Image (cartoon, rainbow, N blue to C red; front, top):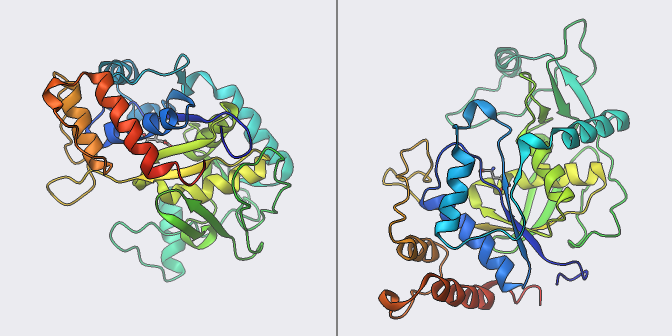
Length: 323
Ligand code: GLU
């Protein structure tokens, strides 16, 4: 149970851009363990909205990999590609409320406007959208939809909200505060860090931010447990939750796996496909990343034995904050 009496519901939400690797298995294991440690439900959602990045059969393969590791969802997996009506409805609500506006800018338009403002892009650093279309398209055709961060007025938080109150300091200075179960107190000035972010892309595809918020709310997710590389998306998602009037889940961002080049392990930097000929060994490596103790007598343990032991260790590490 969560503090509000709602049943704990967690999820793992992989994008099917390739098979699971050591980093994504650690995130999957963490979300599964957290659900088990709370006696809750664990769902899997295949985030296949960014179709150009998805690989054929990728979602099915990930589900097989999870099953091989004994990580079985408590309900049939959902596929975002089948849920676009929900995203349409959410965007229509935001349009109606005046929380989003159409944007005509191409990537080059944005870079030119940033350069004109004297902002030079540093390597890897993304600059906030300069707000060119915020007050009208001036005869240009809208291509994407952006969330109007500065226009955002704090909505009545639903009575179902089970997160500590979220402070949004003012309309001109959108500081979003949140409490991460592992990283502690976090704050982001969304306007300064990312600016008005995209909800629907120029190519018509749904942006991750909108789809993830709509789905977490629709599926009753009480706890999001995912990799730390996604932590800086959380304030945008909290703003969207407030704009849509849906509850904010609690968040726990897990440690990442680092590649030999010192960068976070990802498909882009050559993460090896997982060797699941011995799933317990792969899980033991994931558990180590998560700071869980090694199994005693690992050779003679079954998969369910190992998962059980790690769930108990996880409960000791992370449940004190709720129960
Ligand atoms: N689909 C996202 C990814 O694979 C994760 C989304 C989430 O957990 O919020 O990076």
